[in-house]
Image 1: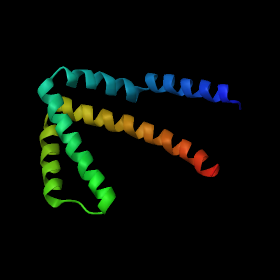
Image 2: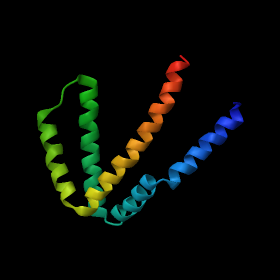
Image 3: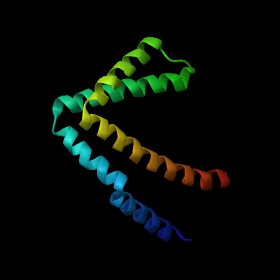
Length: 113
């Protein structure tokens, strides 16, 4: 397969992603969340703290117990809001789809090394 065909397939994949139920649900819920600045700020705060905690764990192999408890408390608050809960579920579903694609591509990349 030549380079042009690979690029065409990449664009086809991008179009398929945009048409997926996971993407459509994620975008729709993100728009609803963004329309509520306080909820969007709460979700951003949760995501930043959760990402920092995960990064620390990946780099050190350890988790700061205090930070972990804070993230757990924030998560409980976030999922109590039905819209935030649906948004997090949609975000997770779309992320899983993207991770599946990366896994498939990664298999090809590993073989070529």
